[in-house]
Amino acid sequence: GDSVTQMEGPVTLSEEAFLTINCTYTATGYPSLFWYVQYPGEGLQLLLKATKADDKGSNKGFEATYRKETTSFHLEKGSVQVSDSAVYFCAGGAGGTSYGKLTFGQGTILTVHP
Amino acid sequence: KAGVTQTPRYLIKTRGQQVTLSCSPISGHRSVSWYQQTPGQGLQFLFEYFSETQRNKGNFPGRFSGRQFSNSRSEMNVSTLELGDSALYLCASSSDNQETQYFGPGTRLLVL
Image (tube, rainbow over all chains, first blue to last red; front, side, top):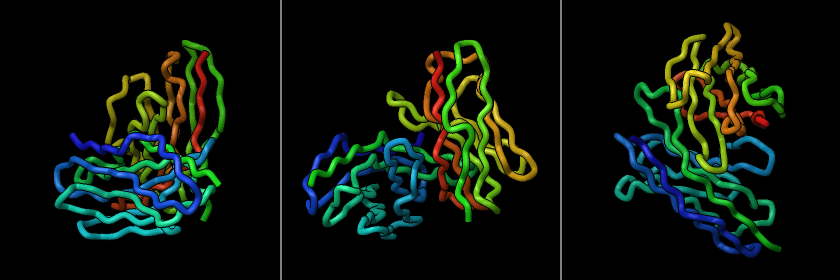
């Protein structure tokens, strides 16, 4: 079945450091890929998405490129802020008749210190 | 547009009871999906409804059920609650034929 694997956390960085959170997926075909962010006590917020190979999603300084050859969708940010501290989830859509189902990675806790 | 809303935000129940959670999707969205989030299992798909029909279901026991109304609002029900049902239950909506899902704030259920 479909699966999404994220790098193990937690990740701790200093403010203005470079961030990379790795994500790889296994699926039949090429699903849409997403990054969601979850702040304490809240639901998931869509951070960015890519619907086909070589698409780059970007939002709020975060970027991720859909790499078909490596089945990856790594999240990057050039300069993190304390306010970026949250849990980040990579997810893949199943497409086809697997309606409404996203498969999530296990989440990566990011802590940014001043 | 208003986002996805879920009620109640918090619930405390005891084993053996049943519970009903409600979700109102973004206006115009007809697809509603439900997920269970726990520290051990992460985010797991429960089921999806579209136009009052369940189109997809995850690997959960029959104690977990849902329904959708003509205005696209959805409810999920858990009967005979177990301690292991303690979790954050998230609802998400999407527009027709779109995979992008928008999540509500969740309902945190504690089973004692």
